[in-house]
Amino acid sequence: MASTVSQKVLLVLSIIFIVLGLALTLGGAFSPAWQIVDIREFRAEHQHGLWWDCVRAEKHVVAVGDFYDETPLHCMQKFDRSAELVIEDTLNNIDEDGAAGESEHHRFWAWHKIVLFFILFGAFSAFISICTGVCAPCFPPCAFVFSISLFVAMICSMIADGVFFLAANRVDNRFVQGMVGTYEQNIGYAFYIHLFGTLAWILAFICTLATTYKFFSTNRRKEFISGFKSFSPQQQNNIGHNLACSYQAQPRSGNTNNPQLNTSFSYNPGPKIPQHSPASFGSRV
Image (cartoon, rainbow, N blue to C red; front, side):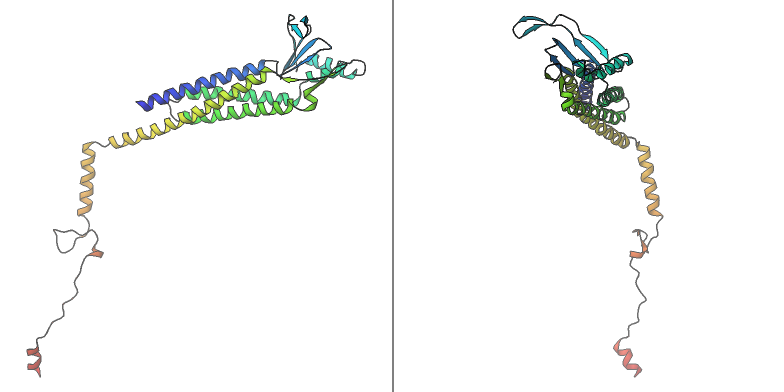
């Protein structure tokens, strides 16, 4: 009973961490704030995400060094063909347009696609893990699939975080060229949201390993007990009778009261040699 309760507690805890990680990773993927740069000469804040970018075009000065955000974000998708054509035209006129260098950061690069692929594949694996985890109490072998799918989700999420972190710290991605100065992009809160989702999946995987161990150990114990109790008294008597018959059917020695299991080890006396007394030997002489 205690083992069953611990199984359910670990399973529920694992699923809670998986759902939490799934919400955080997808929330981070849908946010544009993966890289944030404040271009002061344009009085604009640019947020560069994985598949869409947003710009806050105006900032009203409240005090020295303080800004009050009032204008909403204006966003566009990276894979929009019309936006891609505008970016290409802007880059072609880079000598005339001083802000054309910033447009380079709105393109849909290969590393964006790699990060998105691992995030989406990890989310799909986490969903499979939830489905198999729910079925584990009814069908214990699902616990094995539960652990494998969550492990794949965790690895994919870690790869996505690593690829983005390395790409975001490259010089050509880290700095944005304006008309006058160069501005450094900072890693936004969306990356940290996704990172917290990865940590939640790591904790879920630790709980999943304990859950799988509990399920398989309990299942083996139940099989052993059920196999031991499956022999009825009549079957036990039949087994004893068969053993007794096979014991009696084996070869015996001269003594019928003490059957021998193997005649090769029984004692067989050789022929007796006649012994002559000294008197008879002398009479012959």
